[in-house]
Image (cartoon, helix red, strand yellow):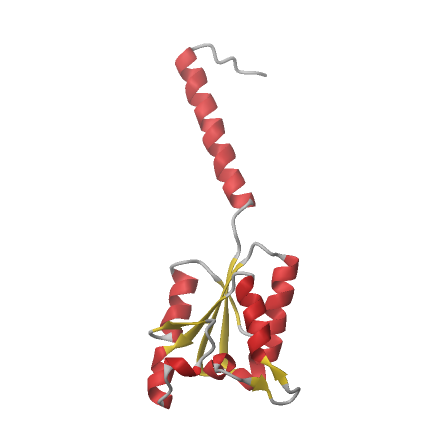
Length: 149
């Protein structure tokens, strides 16, 4: 049974509804995935985390990724830092990911507690007042998925 929409104003409302529904659906289908990677121990998570992020972007290049480091995780972003077990420098891996849009953030509370300065970090590093607060805000307010490698 088909309902016939004969009134021009009803037809307009119906078509407007269909247009809004189509736009809403397309927004869901093409929504950008957003992920926060949480690093709090560079030696345990650094190399594995950077490889996970590379693989993540290889499979889903449009993903917005923010890496938040705090505690021993900030060591990942220190100038000259490397994975001690495999003797692999993090810097080139970080620069490559940065060129693909990944944002790397260092917790300023950790800097203060460990008496570190911003100039000890790679140029690719950004800074956030609190790593834990930043992760919580990204998850709750900005709806980022959470990954801890």
